[in-house]
Length: 225
Ligand SMILES: C[S@@+](CC[C@H](N)C(=O)[O-])C[C@H]1O[C@@H](n2cnc3c(N)ncnc32)[C@H](O)[C@@H]1O
Image (cartoon, rainbow, N blue to C red; front, top):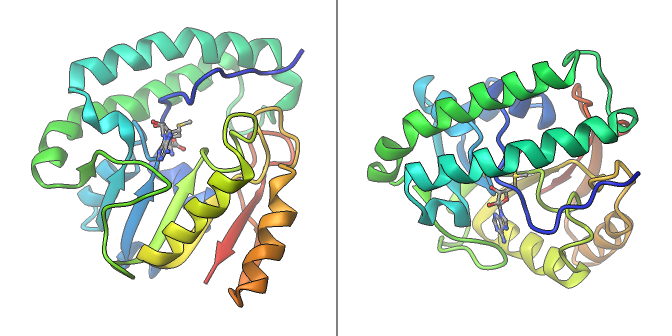
């Protein structure tokens, strides 16, 4: 059984998961951060609550709070069903069961939904999408992209990945991408090609092991400086 997502799902993780996925240190959390493709994750809400400086960009922010809530509801059953059918592709340690997964994700997304109206007014949630971002050169210290690039290898071309990574490097001094596996927990065939091409452009690119693994083998991030 394989996982197939015909579109890119609005589905959100928590601040704690972002910290572990991207090995974020207390010093990192004081930097000016861009969350690209943050969708309904609670990272922005929670980091802002802790005094951080973060802007999230995602196409889903074009919609109202109620519309995003409805999309999450529509996504929920599909993700839970496909995760259940493919449970052997995940590590059931920190998250012990499908039911717990559903609760954790919905709790993170509830925090996002609560924060969204105020965040829009404060321009912390900006509608927009890769491969073109409405920001100035090196406007951010650190850009994070979780569960979009490499994960959706079946939906997004190599060319899209290269243009998107180039754009993230344009707007930020450092870029981190997690995970490096696709939806079926296979290492994305794009990773090695992207690393080669970025290194040819004299960028400093490293694969870093992180203290987070939910998809089996999905415990590496790409760091580009
Ligand atoms: C699986 S969710 C991940 C959300 C969040 N980053 C997390 O890890 O919890 C993927 C997100 O990517 C967003 N997305 C889809 N296409 C995008 C694009 N071209 N540029 C930026 N975000 C995009 C979707 O709207 C969705 O919110």
